[in-house]
Image (cartoon, rainbow, N blue to C red; front, side, top):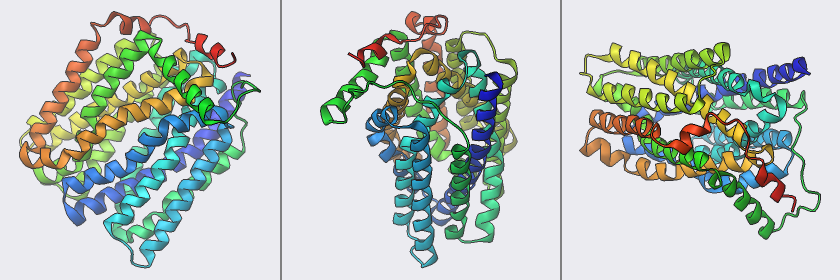
Length: 418
């Protein structure tokens, strides 16, 4: 049994790695293209909104169907949809339709596919591996994402330098094909479903309400969601401004932008590797809070650096990558441990939506912030807020207890069968 789940993950990870690598290359190529073509913080912000808003709006409802549908097929169809949309956009670019509108449409359509793929993947993990291995698996997932983050920007920078953006998009199609192929080779179980369950609007809303109650009925999970949403609200504008900080404050170019992307990936690789190798027994909430503080410090200090401090900026970016990687893996593991697998699709989709929706406000104001406050000061302010979130989290008893008690919130799952 032990070797069986390891083999399944090895097959899935091989396909996902190629898919993540190609997606990382394409995403970075698009960022370079937008940054060099426009140099506008607003354009980068609108691109981020296009990539997130569809997923944010349909996420909660997508989660209901993820928990109803076969999760393997859901991931396959989501990957296929993303590949098909990318192919159409590539053809449009080939015939000369290369305006910003088409980039926004591409990112929006990819977001629809991601609304189904990402939560389905995360919700499948507890059904494939023993609970004791979830944090380690989370660490390995971060390692895979990190390697993709390291190699992807280099590949994307090379690709955009050698060919038009329309041809670069074809890389993502090849990655999607590999991901689908790996999924076809494995069996992914589904949680037990109520045979009387119907697909009507009332039932869908009832299932959505049960997913919400799976979070709100546990004060610790509610606090975890709240603090994570607040931190994400601050992180999103900063993430959009990273390329412009490199270009405008530190006077960098394509190479420097690639370096920052690579060292962020190195940091994530280190963080995921630490979790994958050591599987710490420390309270996961303590880890999450500490990583908020560390990430906030790295961002705030980056904004205080002089224009000649690019080397120090790269070091702080590595530190931020380590913190983000460990935080992501720990946060995901807490949800996988505390929420019944039958409702994980809804919970992950709901979190992505709730966390990202307020961030749209931050992204919409990114251009105003960059022009009136300054990119550097924005890093200082938002980084400081993220650190404060981490500090305050230590003083919430319900949240701190969450990382100690390993009893999952399975009681609500019984209500689904009532």
